Image: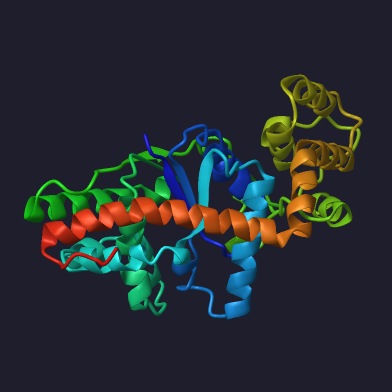
Length: 324
């Protein structure tokens, strides 16, 4: 079973990225056929600064490796290092019906807000389909908001197969567990667009300052507090053991504890939880060549599989054989 997923390099990863997706990607990597890519081609729809895109792409690779992605188990690569992707995208574009793309929520949402929607955004689902189909992917872990794009991928694969014969593997979506809400510093869902994120690898002093800025209510120190309605406690739950959670919950209910004490507990738990990842990040940060080696080795493996699938596609639809 081949698992595949991509992550856009649109900024440093935050706790919402990690607990909502990255941790689950890493749990699925115990499969010799896991492919994970940094979606820099997709990022071109929003990032127009070349140096920034290069920086974000490199930092995304460093962060993924630091957080536990093992290049001996999973293939990690940059999307743009696999030229077979845009070729397959074009082939799929020739069989994609306009109404299918017009229904996709990313395009509809932007259009509804009166924002300019360029061709890149409109055809984004076709590039995503090429990302998936190029490797005979069986399982694609995605958030619930991306399930529609997996259905588009299946539709395009089925249409190609009906026109040219059984060529492409139909993938299935694996919806990530989003039951654990990751609140931001304002109590709303953690998101870059809300400006309320806590980055995974903030320096300790900046991390503590960010945690101490989390919005809380005005309940006096001496009064009991409800841990179930507190975003500070919700973050602690993500980081602490069951026993530690129960101890802090009891402190909440007993009264006599201010939110500052709870925030300090979150800070200490975060430093402990990500301690090994921070150590690994220091290693990769000091050796950028090793990170590039991982990405290039991953691209080589991805291209080998991609060429195999693309050759099937070319033969099926009548394109000349590619030179070896």
